[in-house]
Amino acid sequence: MAKTIISIKNLVKNYGNFEAVKGISFDVYEGEIFGLLGPNGAGKSTTLEIIETLRPKTSGEVNVDGYDLDKQPNEIKRIIGVQLQTSGYYPGLNLVELIELFAGLYNREVNPMGLLESVNLKEKAKAKFKEMSGGQKQRFSVATTLINQPRIIFLDEPTTGLDPQARRSLWELILKIREKGTTIIITTHYMDEAEYLCDRVAIIDSGKIAALNTPDKLIDNLVATGFERVKEMKKANLEDVFINLTGHSLREE
Image (cartoon, rainbow, N blue to C red):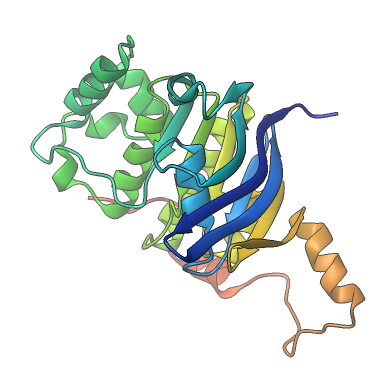
């Protein structure tokens, strides 16, 4: 049986009289890609920020790799990497300089070129962050989550705004990171992305978990109710057509 690396029990977060997270419980297993899905305002980002030690909880229990959030938040910070939706970097520094800066903050020795090569940015080592394309910025943002060699990384809508080639390139990068044993928690509004990447997903709505299972099982459960798509699904979609016609390679300046 897979080891539980994150355990959430009866988590509650209130803002005054508003209950944003309403006593949710779930586990994340070591080495899996776990999706936290939901509409805007559902409570998924609040939940992640609590686990990441970025936001205080109202009540409940949070345990990350054996560390209690209430008693050992600094230990949790040492084993996680966080990529936010909008990451702020010094725009005038090049990528090597930025990695060295982050490594210093983590008190880690890092091979900047090796790290950049792992995210297909070695040729951009001397480029400034402000000069990069959207896809390059997102790959670099993911790279910074790996500097402290985390056991768990959190990716908050990592492919928002990317073109199809850049999006699929980032998918493959995420899978490659997981292959090394890293547990990945991801939020996304793209259901095809969650279906492709995630081993299991939790769907949150109005601060509660509406469903939690593998994507295949959730789909099968819906079909078992008699649900049918209005339009028959084909073996490919329009994004497949786009990539087939324009090529798989990234087109970045």
